[in-house]
Structure formats: C-alpha cells, structure tokens
Amino acid sequence: MIGRLIGEASADDIQSMNAQASDIGDLFTEATAQDGILAEITNAYQRLAQDCGSSDLRVAVRSSSTAEDMQQESFAGQYDSYLNVRGESELIDAVKR
Image 1 (spheres, rainbow, N blue to C red):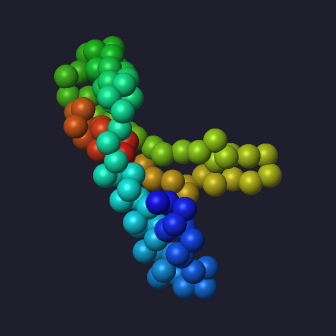
Image 2: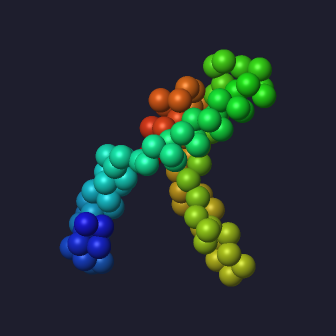
Image 3: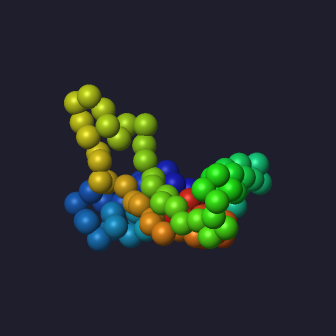
C-alpha cells in the first residue's frame, strides 16, 4: 500500500506529495499495533510513573530514525514531538502518530 502511494506521488507536484504523505501517515495511525508492543509501551510508562511517584505522569513522545544524526548528515528537527502526553491512552495515540 505504501509503495503504491509513493509511486503515485509526483516529485513535480508538491500538493500531490503532501497528499500522499498524509495518506501514508493515516495508515500508521489507523493500524492496529501488536498487543505485545502495546503492552511493553504501557508497562514502561507504568514503571516510569511509579519510579517518579506520580499517578498523573506527563511525558514527551518523540519520533526518530536510525539515520537521524549521521556523521555527514543531520535530520534533527525533521520529526514530530508530542509534549505533555498523559495516561496510557494518550501515550499510545502519540506513539502511533
């Protein structure tokens, strides 16, 4: 599906590229994550909240890439950050976004 959307985008048409990028983003937010991954995320959040002594812990969720800070190139600031994420539901939503 993603390959098809990329193939439909025209490098000469920024609106087309933006539309395809939006559609690809939608695929990620609408996808169902594996239960094991969700459990690991929520368990880590619960442990962090307990370690911080907070039942209402706010965290930041930041997307990144293995190629974000390479020796010859930097993509810092190219990704999204979500601040003041509170609770397991908001956390899972931010991770998907």
